[in-house]
Length: 119
Image 1 (cartoon, helix red, strand yellow):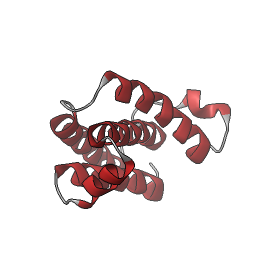
Image 2 (cartoon, rainbow, N blue to C red):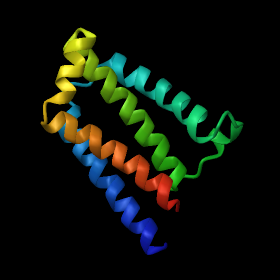
Image 3 (cartoon, one colour):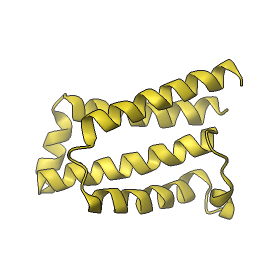
């Protein structure tokens, strides 16, 4: 395993651990379900650009990690919206600098890291 891939895998484990610490209690069944469906769809549309190879992703590769990040991102955004109730309250909750926005930034940083570095 390349050192770049090892660092990305460690970053992935840290982000997933942070997600379970921050978001697990507030994640509803609906947010998890639609996050999984929405994350796969987002990954298929943006990363694979409509290619059917989304089913051929090997575990722990950059594509697999980005797929998991996409699912976590969509599930977390849905959970935040469910907690807020309205769109303006949702946007206001994103403006407050706390664990919720730190998790959102961490997931986006993981996606950008895996896109930029590959591996």
